[in-house]
Image 1 (cartoon, rainbow, N blue to C red):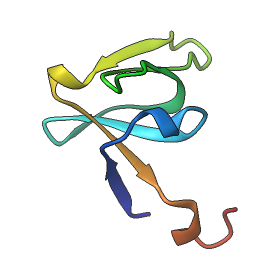
Image 2: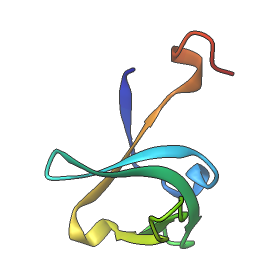
Image 3: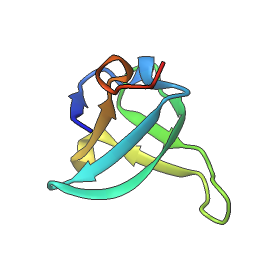
Image 4: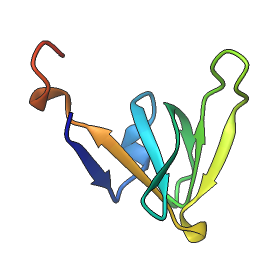
Length: 74
């Protein structure tokens, strides 16, 4: 799976993403919400993992697998 860095966060609401900081994976999950200025993103809670906030200004990056590049995904 090839991941791609996303500069625009707002279009990612509802998508599965990978959050990275300094090249390390911090968390994977579904984007729950993004501020209108694209500076803050929340990942939805999943099981025992609570909803979590990530700020662009703190160096967090959002990466996504483009569905059209992965065989069998639509």
